[in-house]
Structures are given as structure tokens and as C-alpha cells.
Image 1 (cartoon, one colour):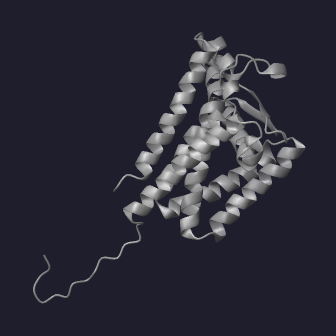
Image 2: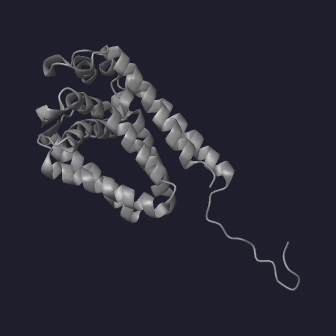
Image 3: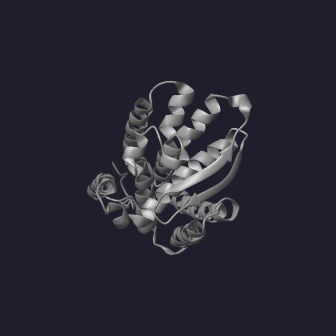
Length: 247
């Protein structure tokens, strides 16, 4: 109740109406489902080509950064035009066998965790803008420090410049939507090669990530593949729930 003698002043807010927020959430969920489906369809990778390259970068950076966190070395990262990639690293024997298993898991699970961070950053515009700049900067830095394939040296800096420039020039609403969209893409990138997640071997490269986990943690590769597939969706759902939760 306003006090007598005082004029009523309407409260101004910059928050989007609930209906607009719901539409944004529905669009993001639809985009996530469409992305997962397209990645399983022949030719779908070409429709999502930039996000396929970004998904590979998230995956391989997950391996390399986990190796660094465990006191090892991140030697190099190669990304190829067909969307595949490989990270070369070494870790301390002291952490055997948990260390190699954690590095193997960081490939599939690094992107969902990074994606959740991007989605949660959308709750505050200053954090949104800063996070986009950090992502663009890390892409550029990784090209200097670790990327050693000719295609990666071309594609990764271009992605970094686009994202960094977007954070500098794009209007607020576009940055907020972009960081959520990139976060969703990172979360669902676990499904980029779903058959790989449930494969024991990775061809000439030897054991797959889940095959490595079976080797060091004993439980079968398909168990780890299923666990990570489920965990990625849970992380995505929880991060969206928190991002769209009323304060």
C-alpha cells in the first residue's frame, strides 16, 4: 500500500516476461534435441559443421586440461577437417590407475561441464559477456599453445575471433541467447559420436575413452558410456532449470 501524499512510481525492470523466457527455454530444448538427432543422421554433421568442430575442441581440451590438472603435460591437440581430433598428453605414474581413467573421462564429460558453466553464466549479463570473451580467448590461446594440425590452426582461431567479437559487438539479448545456445551445444556434444561412446576400440588410435575406463576401472565400457550419456542430459537439464529459475 502506498503512503498518502506520495505519488505512485511504477517499478522498472529489465527482466524478460515469463512467457518470453518460456519460449526461449522451449527453443533451446528443441535445438538440443534437433542437434542430437542431426548428429546421428548421415550428412547431419555438415549442417552442424562449426558446432562439430567446437564439440571436438571441447572434447580434446577436456583430455589435455585434465592431464595438466593431474600434474602431467598437454603436448598437442590435432583437429581434422572431418571433425575428428586427438589430444597427446602424459601423466604421472603416481596417480595410476585413477589418473588415466580421469583423463579418459574428461573427454566426454568436459564439454557438458563447460556447457553447464556457460548456461549458468547467462543469469548475469556482465558474467555472460565476460564468459564469451574468455571462451573466445581460450580458443585463441589453445591455437598458440597446443593446436598442431593445419586445419585446427585455421578453424580454431576463426571460431575464437567470432566468439570474442560477438562478445564485444553484439547486443545484450543476442549475447545472452548465444551463450545459452553454445552451452547447450557443449552439453549435447557427448552425443556427437554416440557409437564411439559405446565402442571399446577407436581404430588406429587404440582403445576408446570408455575402453580406457574399462581398462583402469574394470567395469565394462558400455557401463561408462551409458553413465556419461545419462550424466550429460542431467547436467544439461539441471543447468537450464537453474538458469531459468525465478530469483
